[in-house]
Image (cartoon, rainbow, N blue to C red; front, top):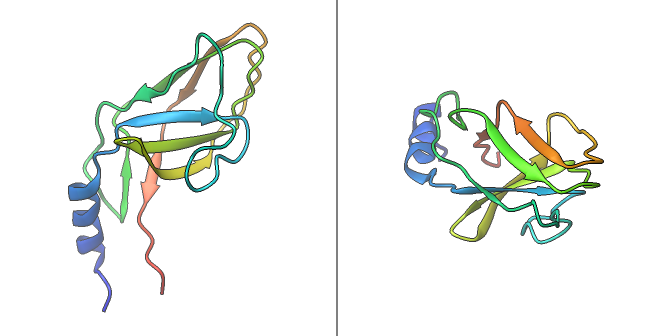
Length: 116
């Protein structure tokens, strides 16, 4: 038995309480513990809210903005819920921050995919 698209959207709606995003200089691995950025200006950032799920995916409501320390090169992200890594991925755009600055992610989506 498998969930219908409506069922998957409901799972996302009930389950999406992901609360933080972290940035990483390479693959964070499944538990999110590897390659997290460092520096005085960097910290995991809260995710305020999520849009209503549709088409088996959910999207962050608004721009995600994370400050990075000079010299960091963020390439990946991890999404957290109460300190547990729930999702990882490659940033949609990679930039260099020789003097520090902000990574801005205009659209961040999580898609529910169940094994066949």
